[in-house]
Structures are given as structure tokens and as C-alpha cells.
Image 1 (cartoon, helix red, strand yellow):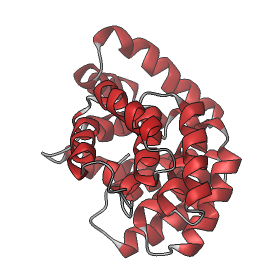
Image 2 (cartoon, one colour):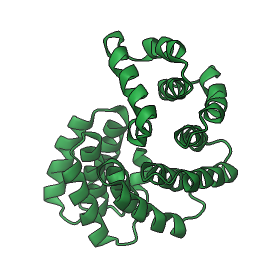
Image 3 (cartoon, helix red, strand yellow):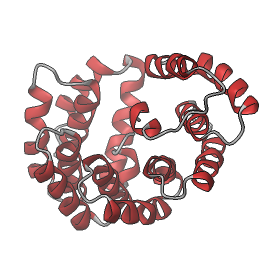
Length: 240
């Protein structure tokens, strides 16, 4: 989750230095979330009701998988700014696995308000997939791609969605070029392995996984992928 998306539009009280938040942002961006939390907890109690602090606290809790706390904080932020896109999206991203239906409903409204926001649209597509609405999800991904062809996530998710809806061959053809690119990421490679499994190409998928995840976890991961395609359970594929 991009920190810049979560904190854009924040109005910072003048009682503390802007540099305090700059330091926290740097810590969150670098992965030093526990250190950021220590500073945030102090600021949160010293300056209650500050939207910028609350949003950062919510983001940090979400990163640390403290989902109930993050939900509470996003709701607190919405009590201050009810139309905050960042807070609604933050909530939706937490609910996307906890309560896919609730996530879909939130993102449906946010997408209607921000029809040209590719990131929101991509999240909306994921929520539709998680609710088994593959055709609708694919339409959303295609719209996101048409808005910004440079974004990789909607295209990868389109490939995964097609595979989930039974067209594993086309899904593989979409994802493969990204997996073959020199600047490919481990996430893209894992998605590529997933669609290879969907196509029954187990040995190729296994060889890829050995490069990107610990060797002692490959067997369990392969078993999970085989179950995913057997039961059409999108939750195991759309990794956040």
C-alpha cells in the first residue's frame, strides 16, 4: 500500500513540526514500521483528532497486520473527513480478505466517485473476483488498462481472473511477457507460477517457485496452488 496515497491531502496541525511526519513517512516507506509506530503512538495521544496522524497510524497498523486497530483508525479518520478517498480505500483493502462483499460495496462507491483512478479500479476488480464476479472484474481491469496502459497490476490481475473463470490459456499468455521481462518482480513470478499450475504445467511452476520462495515452502505452496485451481478460490491467488 503506497504511503503517499494514504496521506495525501492531510492537514497537519501547527503544534508539531512537519519534520516529525516526514521522519515517520520515511520509516514507513523503508519498512521500519515498529519505529514509526512508537513515534505515532506518542503523536496520536498528544494531538487527538489530527487526520494526518490518524491516517499514518492506520497505515502502520495495517502493515503490521493489526487489522482491527487499522479499521478503527480509518473509521476515526472518516469521522473527521467523511469523503476521504484514502480512508475508504484503506478500509476496503483490509476488508478485501476479511469481508470481500463489504470491500466490493465500498469500492463500488469509490470507483463511481473517482472513475479515472486506476488504483481504485484495480482494487475494485480484485473485490469482484473475490466475490466470484469474474466477467465484471475483467471489464473493470480492461477499463483500468485503457486508462493507463503503463500500469502492470490490472493486466496481471486480468490474466489471473481469466484463469479463474476457466480460460487459463489466455491468462497465461497475458502474464507470461511480464514474467519474462528483465525487471520482473517476485510477485509477478509467483503469479506466473500460479497460472502455469492452472494450465497443468506443474514442473515449470515448481522451478520458478524455487527461485523466489524458500525451498522448504515450495511443496506446500504448490499444494495450495493446486487446491486453488481445483476449487476456484481466488483468495489464494490475489495476494496483496
